[in-house]
Length: 511
Image 1 (spheres, rainbow, N blue to C red):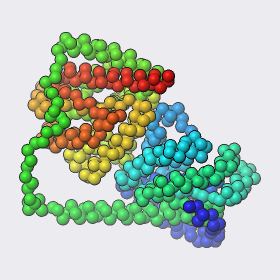
Image 2: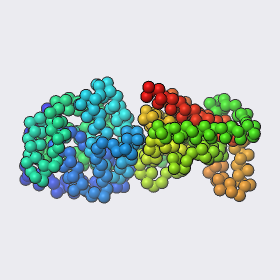
Image 3: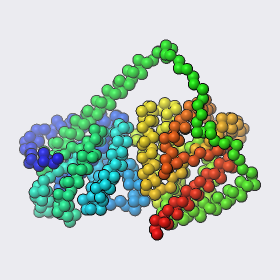
Image 4: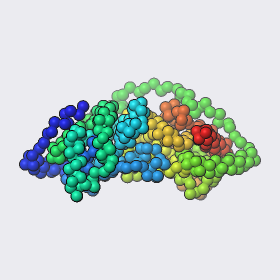
């Protein structure tokens, strides 16, 4: 695989100087066009030590406007990073739409090093690459342009390069003891890199192997590749947008001639199978609430000691009692140890990122409790029903969400997901009651009434959501919430049970 990057190709200073002005101008022009685009550019640099990764990143920042570039390099995870799933720090650092992100020692570094040093078997190495493939596919599906450069040197060229850097006082600091240890493992590095590149080079995120011995040749290849890729992606996205607009225009005015589909009778859903008569006596409720609160307080403190994080997701109909259930639950916790994240329409900053970004950024440190009042499931609920995203986007979101939740639970996070269900009649009664109570009137909006008119569509969406995303490690809990008292006790009991089981598993693992 790497033979073509060990040919000793060079570009003379005169050739590079003749190429540079026009190439730099074109890149700057493309960067300005990119600022108005609906996608980010993610550029990954990996490769042999001394092959020019750092120099390439520095040159890009020098040639382009650094205000629209995000540069990130990673070392050993900090305590803050280690307490969260592996990809948390990468999601946090992703560039927004219109910007370029340069990544050194990125998501490829740890799997590669672990395999080279014998800390991971071949099977474990392959397994560690799968989340990377899914991560890049998730970004690309949302429009991101992903470029990956493997900067290569032959073994003799690497030795020559490291010695050359060591001799110069101004560059000697760049060569470390680790670099020379990696040099001794050169053959293992190259063999492992070959496997990694073959498995992770996809159409949406392919690798470009760059010969790094000659700095001018290396720079020309990297910069030319970036120029062509951005120009091509801009053109592709513009063409796709134009075609979509033309199709939309072509279908206007045809609605009246369209055949009206035969209305099917309402289909049963998983929600229609719930026993909505579930209730609890007021006296029993007071006692049960007190008991569950004490139990939860004890378990959550034990979870803090065990550095066991908890993520709670609340979805449900308008007026189903999500807020009331959350308040009863958090009353058992210390305000220092939890955060409630109310999810509304995305802000301008959030719209510039992948839709999962705003949820990843809120994943808390070990031992904390994060409560999402509405969540990433908005993609397959409100965005689906209201047409805020394409059918293709919400359909692929099931796999993206399942992957996200799998990363959380694999990291050891306790994840509980609740759908609070009420009947249409109960919702109407609660809407009317809200309109009569001064301190609750603000909760009732025109949007609530509009959403109610689409009850059937939302119920079908909920049914598919549960069907597609209730997994063994992240199951949905459907809560019969016509009785607020019953719902609150069920929610608290479910969370307490989940913490109890997780703590028991940790204890068994220690033994």
